[in-house]
Length: 283
Image: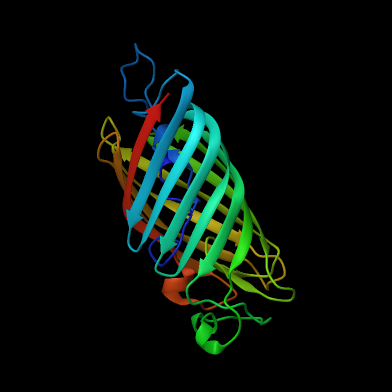
């Protein structure tokens, strides 16, 4: 169950890259029960393979309202077990963010380390306040556009549990902004005091039917924001459907349960609704 739930971390109201999917673990579907008979090797993913070669792969997320083409150049089995260089360009209705970094993936573990440049369309660096509202974030209030560079590290774990799978993700972020400025971090979807914040996300999805091509579950997340009155707690439902080897659909809506701020549904919710297409070529 891991790979299917990562649209990348993520972004506007519906997306929240994600990575992030994150950041869900990018192959959560692999944690589900195997689909092959007990007499053969368990098959957790249509991309599962023991063959290791150089490859190029593209995973493209498109949804409401975002797009993120992702290119991976690596060695191993694409979308299953590999090491390589990862790059994407995420664009939503609120910001654009190119990213490049290193990635290593095992069947039930994924890790990323890279640099992201975030360019918001209508956000500003924020003065220090105990509480922020969604109306505080925009450039109409004056100030400098809050473009910033972030160093992302992400570790995602998944495991088969009962007739489905559990997942757990860690996403520390270091960002570089002008001194004494606070910033709305587009991927974690919180107002943070630089330079550090960390997202923690976990959950479970239940797989329907023998092949578990349709999964429904729930997630909970907590974002550590040192220097703020307290962290941000969110939770809600998530859904995934495997349509073919190359195409998947997904949705998640993680609503604010506790926060020091009042960012509203659009800026406070971690959510996405979209399709993911996968393609790979071995060399």
